[in-house]
Length: 81
Image (cartoon, rainbow, N blue to C red):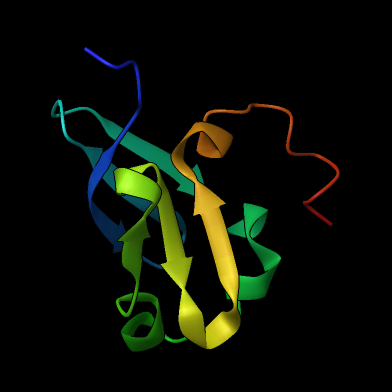
């Protein structure tokens, strides 16, 4: 095992981003953590691609990339305002 945390799918609802990992776990984080994505429609949020061997997510339309490991950081207070 290479130790990389890899995404399989991404799903977004009104409040959370849910990422299913290759090993079956699901990470859910508040959309409030991702200001560049907050004004996006659900259709725009579905238009993502997995990058960096599945260790990241990209929304080209917003020029926004998110690492899966970054979703696991619990101290996001500076991003929530």
